[in-house]
Amino acid sequence: MVKYAQNELFSITDFTKQIGSAVSSIKEHSLEKIGILKNNKLEAVVISTDEYERLKELEEMFELAEHTQIYKTIQQRKETPLSEYVSMQDMGKKSDIIREKRRKSL
Image (cartoon, rainbow, N blue to C red):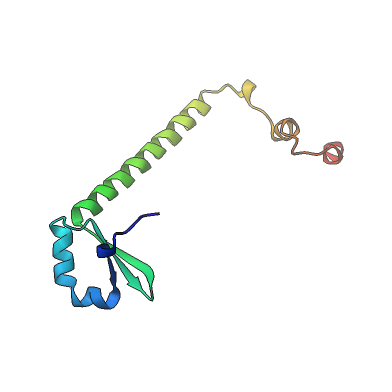
């Protein structure tokens, strides 16, 4: 959970009254973020454009890493000889997913 300093929290009413100075504080980096409260509940966060772009780049990097790992897994599986494949039944038995009664009917 993200922690907020007292000066980083604004009611939505105060934020709308002070939007110019609040955005300037974010832009000048005197505040890292501003939490906007509605009925004492955090509803939104204002961050700088630089911070937003940094977070989006991180998100894209994680997605690329995930896709790369999925691709590598698929390539490894494609190289696995069919003789090494395990049937669903055998896997169920090995994992004790298929119980004895069901095994008999299969």
